[in-house]
Picture 1 (cartoon, rainbow, N blue to C red):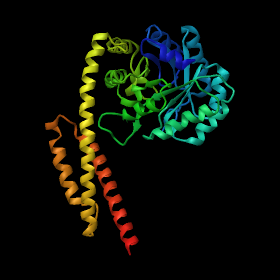
Picture 2 (cartoon, rainbow, N blue to C red):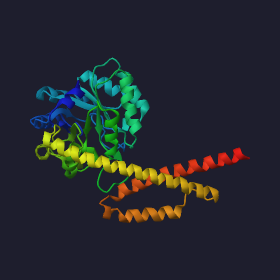
Picture 3 (cartoon, rainbow, N blue to C red):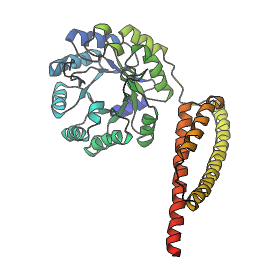
Picture 4 (cartoon, helix red, strand yellow):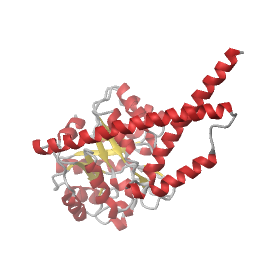
Length: 362
């Protein structure tokens, strides 16, 4: 099974090839050049390209399928392409493509996912599923469930980032917490990172690829083109074969198996962390008891739970202090929001209980 091959591969499992299949020579020559790198285990090329605007290049369609399959035959590597409907599935299977992937614009549509899953019932083929364009973990998990319900269990996840309007750095923001959450929910599913679509910028590929490996992702999907500036689609995010090889060489491969002395050192630090975490939760528990006390005061004096002026002042004070604590403002904001919501929950509970008791007494 593909997922077992990826999980058992002792290096990053790399999928590479052009964003779009443009000509037979371009596909086969590019794939032959990148196949020489040991990390490369699968070839990719876009045959059908779901584009935002109808006047963009949307792929050559089924006429390009034999080029990808021939590249796989010449290199001995598996091949993969994106499918977005049952016609794509039928033509890709007929041509002999080894692995199918579901794109982000398809994953976001449960009807389309179900249609493709139904068309693959009884077919023994691996399927890779990209995250939906919007940051919705349940929607991503749901796509896996639909394929599993159709009898397909050789499934792989691809993290390609999430759409956002004019982000200053990324084409699609990584939101690493979402693929990490998917790994927790589906631990037997390998996770591949697509830094090409996350960055939209070849100069950021190494940075994001390294981040993915540091987070224990199983592999990478990278777009490679012989002359990226002349590519028919996504020029900025594609990389030349030689630079692609340099990128692979520059990656730091982290150890998974710990030496006994390192394991002991980590255990010592983790015990200290656990002690601190216990104290944090004890303090939070005490914090919520004070919130309940505040709720009683507000209820007795007929005051609204939310005091926007006080909350805004507290929030700004803590955000200003974030750097002095060695914490990011984003983390402090998320933490305070969580504490505030839990405090509101406790205050609401107190008010509802008090009101219920009042009615009972009368």
